[in-house]
Amino acid sequence: MKTNFTQDAHVQELMTRRFGHDNLIAMATEQDHTPFVRAVNTYYEDGSFYVITYALSNKMLQLQNNPKIAICGDWFTAQGLGENMGNILAPENADLADKLRTAFAEWYDNGHTNDADPNTIILRIRLTSGVLFSHGERYDIDFTK
Image 1 (cartoon, rainbow, N blue to C red):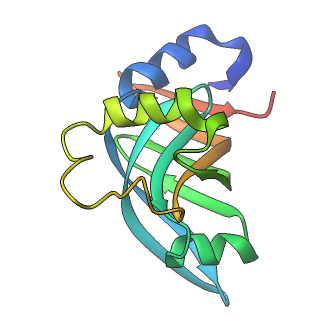
Image 2 (image 1 turned 180 degrees about the vertical axis):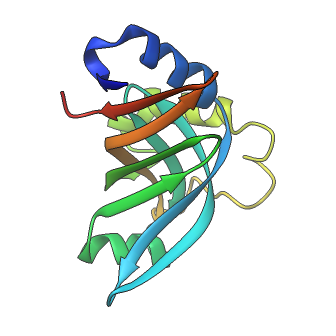
């Protein structure tokens, strides 16, 4: 079923229920015509996935040259655009950072994340299109409308 995300409350609810908490998904980027994929912890909200990462990581360096991202996880595949939202402690990120700390509470303070480091950032994956499977239904989603 083809659907426009902003007009389909059922698909919005499915996405939030399935991904509105800590999820491990595969995220692919590209550099010099070579794909790179890695598993990332994500939190989903309103048509975007969010990742806490390091500004100097390979994924962020690759996204500077090509912001296109592909993701896959839990019967969902999608394409989107990566956006560096800046440091997790930036005032404009305060509300989102609180949500991310809550979603990632199980591992957030295990020494892997350092909020005081200015290179600790929020990556937003703004979805453009995707395919979601749920209870035998296929949803081809246009996130841009």
